[in-house]
Length: 246
Image 1 (cartoon, one colour):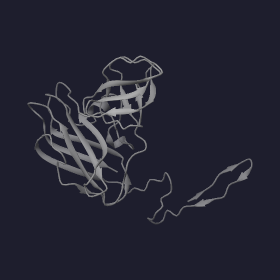
Image 2 (cartoon, rainbow, N blue to C red):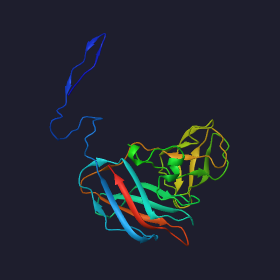
Image 3 (cartoon, one colour):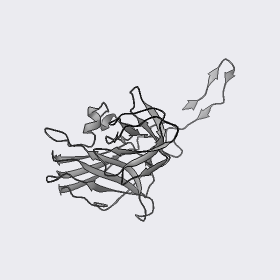
Image 4 (cartoon, helix red, strand yellow):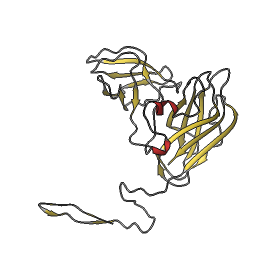
């Protein structure tokens, strides 16, 4: 493939990218068709656990496309929450790939972590080229615009932890009149609070959506695993599948 630019000043130097063989580096933006899926399956009733299964090794370097989970038998007794993670040092330390959850939906119960977001206008995994990184986060209190930092209580259907990283940018009430883009200056994962400067006022229930770019890169030899952070009660649902698509 030849790549160049032409305008009224003339022609730029041409860059040649050979696409007839599989070698690094790939042309920027060129889909390599290297992708696949890492799938975990856990039979039986769901239960809270860390590193639920033996970690799986990454076989080929790739970026994350989409992460989701589903159960064969749903429940209407509550929601469940999951943390998908990656280790680059054989499990000594873990990095978060995605928090997600299966929402409580009536009357039949949700089967997939994406059921709620699809009902809000997102596409199903087959249409995705980036992770969802969305689990129904909302503001649990009103926010009044001001020049100073404010610590705000949040909640979600899918995570027993906040899931925001300090320095990350989040969208507040995306697509609405009070939409704004704020940086997370501090975060308490367990208490599900975050600190930011708000230039717009927001009502309780306003949505908060983390950014999804850049996505994580999996390197050959990395380990993949997941935790179950919370389950419904008394019926937790059963037969779980977790999928990491690249």
